[in-house]
Image (cartoon, rainbow, N blue to C red; front, side, top):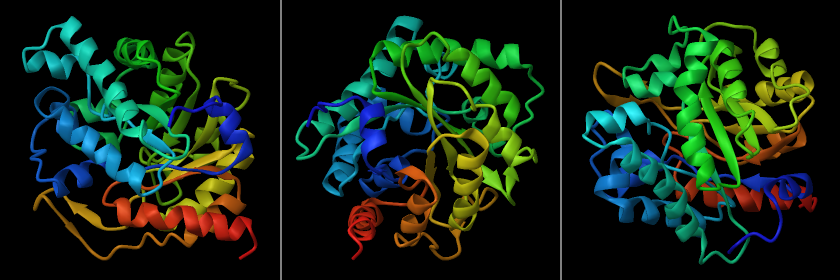
Length: 305
């Protein structure tokens, strides 16, 4: 369903349920994501699979769909032989596919254009370390063209997500200054600090007073980190929080597999919302079945039931 309100208006009125991990849903559909472009490869090779994955989350009750552009870059597409015009079309396609999946929804569904960190382009896990040795200016120059390409496709919001350190957050906020699209800023954290080890309150505070930023928070982290991070994000930024942690399982890069038990409990979302989260969903290994429980949990809490 096409929204009648702006994303900012909806965010002010209610808690919006985000989707879950796109990659795990694509893998559940039988897609092979063993490529440096990860899910972004399917923008060229299997767009119908991306639309189907988005549609699975729409059926689960997601009100915000995050596009498949997390690992999409002009440099990455160039390595696969795509020129800048073709790459720009693929960025636009990521938004179009999410819009198409949302078209049949019974409720308003918004589209968030995913802007992943510089480290995602390297495809070596460095998005979970940060501190790339690049300046703010270098990182701004990297992000600006992809932000411009996504913004041209007119998503409702840009998701500056899985940001590992304050330097990259600063660069991203500079790169979106003239894009004409509102944004949210979401760090990946560990042990109550950014992945680069920086103070989390200071990291959230970089968005304070920035009117383009609608929400600040965390994603791609352990669910156990989420509650305290939400409270800190609201206090340090003066903005609503966004929160979409992983399942709680651990990725073993050497063995290339997930280990441990799922720790994402939809009931936790009630506490996150009570602490100021207005965007709540899941990231890696959180699928449609879990997202389908978020809406009822939040609605029951809002109604006192």
